[in-house]
Length: 225
Length: 225
DNA sequence: TTTGCAAAGATAGTGTTACTATCTTTTAAA
DNA sequence: TTTAAAAGATAGTAACACTATCTTTGCAAA
Image 1 (tube, each protein chain N blue to C red):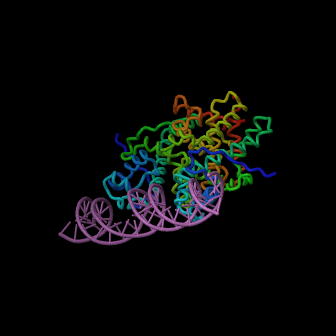
Image 2 (image 1 turned 90 degrees about the horizontal axis):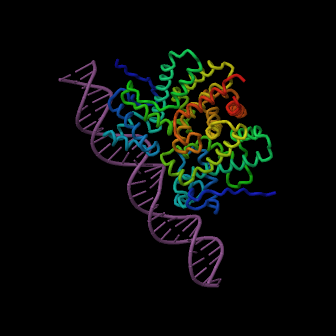
Image 3 (image 1 turned 60 degrees about the vertical axis):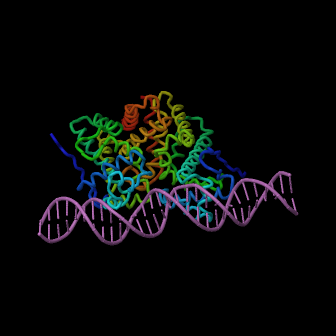
């Protein structure tokens, strides 16, 4: 079975749809590699164009600037993750088990999904951990939000918020708890690997520990008092 | 009583100590205002020098680059906050009440502290919410950490982690819970004001709600099962 | 009072970044 | 076969991120 997964992206994210051409796909592929290698601050369209073997102007025909490209990559990631969440919890009847599955998805290294040809999800996951919040932590956040650029993130958060409510309909902060576990799945991972004294996982640096911490956090919070 | 609070900063944070001269103090004062006004990305030493009425080269005599200045500001903020935490929980005997006091300090707008003459803590607090994580979310994080640039953040986290243990000695994740509430105090605030659908506080946009959410999160987690 | 030295000011210069413009060539569909 | 869109080639500009050097100022020790 050879299935290809295509995620429909908000058209305001790009000037020309990168999924519609070879050059566009190369931009996605190589930008993921370059950002992962040097970090978002050191990433420039010039370097990207050299990497691809095209010109700077060529990249600008697809993306307004590198920040838009970062928003594109994060939006793609959150959309893909929401799909994973939906797909992988599909047959799970029990609400608690379903939520546990989601926590594991959020906090565990993803394997490259062969359904998407020019995106390496495991590298993209690493990028989102370090650079993801920079997509919205800007002065432009409200304008960008009006253009619905963060919709995939908000959608995922809503889905998880609803799963929390299914476990515990009386819980008062489902959305805040959802955004907390999404962000903390990443932050605790970053801390574990870079500033381990901010976590309790410094010894073995094991993602499974993060999962246990988040499960403990979530299920303590939502269980009836 | 006229007390001045002076925070001893790590010498690797600057080239020349900004607290030792008028120009240095102006750099701190005006950089806080400028970053708050335009955001860290749009902030440049050129603009800062014009604002102050000095030259770009003058700023570079104090700070290696704008990222170092950001780390300086965040380090200052965490040091100041640790002092506030220590000071304001000083007479509280009950561990639970003490932790509640800390959560309130983390999640509530700070008033300008008149003990520090050239730092406006309430504006700095806003900056830390939006820009704070950018200090460590870089490729340089490990090197910077080796130079102990993040010590104030880690110290605060350790203090709060210990307070958690005082409430609940058997709790398994005191440090991760501490870093979680520090970050979430800021993120939920940012979300509430900019991406409200990621929170449950969209209606009244009240910081007191964030405090209640965090208290619920912490005390559900640490209470004995 | 003079000397000396460090901080600050003034000015200039360089390579890079973040674009924009325009012109030509290639490609692929009508 | 035409033709229009995409891509390539090239150039240019303003701002940014520095570095260097020289002059002036203020102030403290000799």
